[in-house]
Length: 373
Ligand SMILES: *Cc1c(COP(=O)(O)O)cnc(C)c1O
Image 1 (spheres, protein in one colour):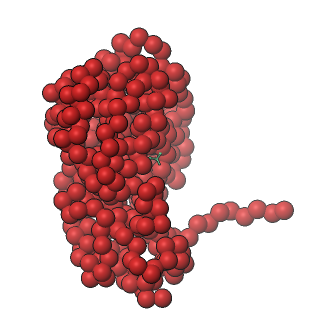
Image 2: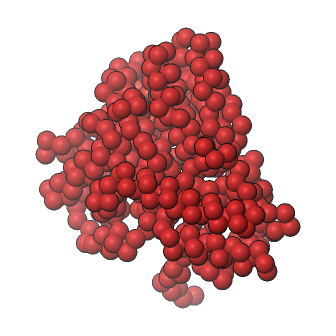
Image 3: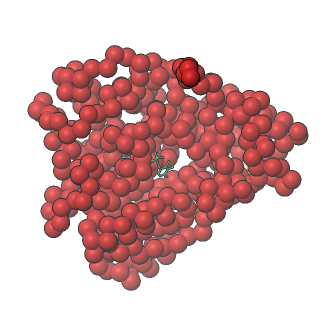
């Protein structure tokens, strides 16, 4: 048997992630691998940290790129902060809120679940009621941008509520980072995690995370040992802390971090606010075009994520056939529905580098063609 090199086609990725990676970031990935304790590499890691602080809008000292995907970032937040027996209020309005509950219960902690309808923002009143009913709750956890439904929640209001009840916040920003307004310090977020393959337009497999000084204090004063060795951030803090003396914890994904460094420079050069505005503008053009095609959004206008457009599959259209047609004829990937929306929705991503006019135009004309076939 002979094997050939794998040469993937050039797709246009307009699904829920991974998003299109620019040539500039891909070329950073192909630079020579150096040792992860090489002084030059350590310098670059320090820059990644500074650039992540900018992206998250935080001064948090503990701001790092976890060597694992967004789901591991989620798990890192929960296993470091939450101990068995703790009470955690978890907001569920889609697939990722559900995963948070799974994290809480596997730790042996108690999840107080606040359900909001799928395709809608987290309902603030319900969260307020849960906080009132559970004065002993230690954490409030929610997803800022629910990629499974395309709904954004009011992270600022939720954090304010949590602070009034002396709860720390754990926030999923996998799809929000770089795509919509997100201000970790101003909003008072305590633990946040993201992913590189959504609005950062970087390769998958890295999760930027950041803990507030209050969250770090909680981690350092735990009664019990963190059950996961790899995700125990007290061990990683030494690895990422500057001061030149870095000790071995695990081998960093060297080339992927080159890519993240490059993607973060691109975000910094563009400017966060400009990136948020670009996502919004492209979303508006897409929404207008979809309306002309008679396609309807799942999420009400003021709760929509610009970077993830969840739409109802039009009557008579075959879900898989249309998506396959787009892939075969246009090299265009859009996302299928997830969870409660499987078979009922498509998810069109306008993330990072992919949030541009030519992609929107292509998506609209390709979709029109596919629906006519
Ligand atoms: C994609 C995503 C995740 C999981 O990230 P992976 O990198 O796939 O592990 C978590 N939360 C949200 C909101 C996401 O969109």
